[in-house]
Image (cartoon, rainbow, N blue to C red; front, side, top):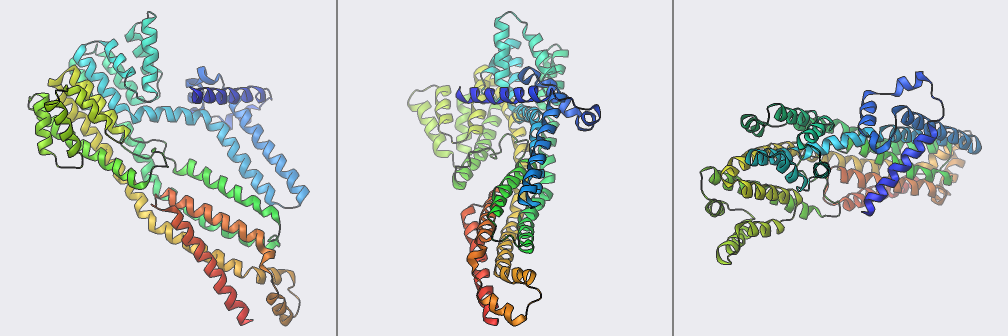
Length: 522
């Protein structure tokens, strides 16, 4: 409840700021250049939540962009360095995009969240509809299904039905006002056919192409996006270092501002380029980052093994075996990591006189991951409603899940192919930056005393104190840590701390070896 209140307060604050700033008149020329069809659709869809027009959002985004530029110009004039202007432009651009795209992102997230669970929700809706011939029962079961966003919308429909609204009318309005085109068309097709049994069976056997297209779109672009982020993480620190040395800023404490700037920039790139907008059902990309890779692998394996077992179970049900006999035959046929839990299920059901459904619930509670639990809860409702038809329904559901697994493996392959490349580039960055730091005194003297005698330059070099370069050194070390850690997390390296230590060791060793060689040579 507290999270809900905080989220509402944030939304309310966003709306109030936009309403206040939008009173500043915005020329039609600027508005027409920035406005987009996506913003129009998102603002219309979320109007009951934010009560904002596209013009109010655009006015606010432009205001904050120019505010950031003006503030950075003042700092540039005061400190006489263009570094603040560059940082101000970047921060202004980021804040402009964040304000402008907030509603678009929320609309897209709602659409993709519906697509993520569309297989389960629509399968369950059609199964209940085919079994009970009742729209109310279908809506009620979805409302109790704990599907993110979708169940909440169906709970609202149940409340309105209890207030006297017609279920068919509410379902029709839901179809018209939700963002997934494919789901909208399928629901409207069911309604137009007057809930024909043939149409329901046809929809059960079909799959939603929009879901696959959204997932594959990001996967196909992933390789090039990873290369772009790698390039920025590798060459931007080099550009910072050379610029600082050429301008003699190596002892200026203001260069520490590059640390939060680099962190913000990398975070923005991860969110805008590498964060998948669509997580397909069965993927574990949204799993809590605190879970170890070992436990995450266990969860993935458990999910895959469950699909294998349920394939046996569904096929035996299709052959018109009873639920209990189908389950026993499936356990005998299956030989995976879930075998001990399934045998315990049989003990509870056969020897402890526990009902099949209660034993099923106990088995569900023993599993580690949410997708497995949701599948088993859905199949439980299938078995309760119509165990005879459950076999075909389970196989139809598993067919969709196996397609999802193939798409997930393609994405994981892209990350694996980039692992060696990223580790190598991290080490090369450490080597080059270490080399530049060791040569920093040479750069400094070369540009400060270019006309003095060479022997005198050598004497000055030998008397150099690297403490004078401490702000630059600490800044580069921090940037290397941020870069190495984030790159390791992006491509899912098992131990990112190891990658950081190795990069810093290369940096330190290169610096020390070059320092000894350079000053012994002099």
